[in-house]
Length: 123
Image (cartoon, rainbow, N blue to C red; front, side, top):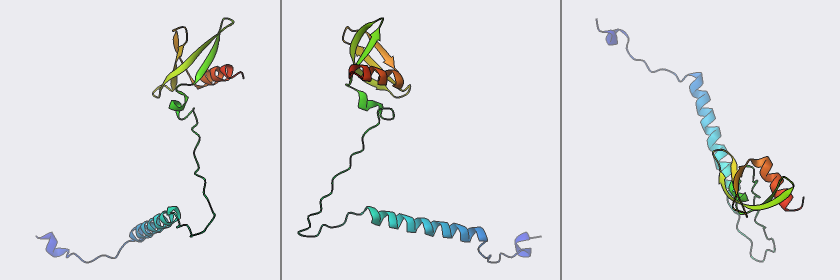
């Protein structure tokens, strides 16, 4: 027996999930189109006195560890203050490498680094 002959292929109607998928994709296309138009800069009118100031995001050193490289730090060792410099950020471990002026070195986590920067800045 030939099963294909017994069950001829009939065109099927789109299912409900097909309609939902189509609705979602057209919604996403509309959202992308409106987002694109929102970010397109508008032409400046001749003679217009409007100026825009560029916004710069300040980098949060806790999330952007490299922004602390080169900062000066101080640490109290047994009552004596030692000064040093942040040399590098170790992203994998979220640690900052410190090289002290006397040649010693250590790594600090964010809390220790923040305290060392505050101590150096007089805080």
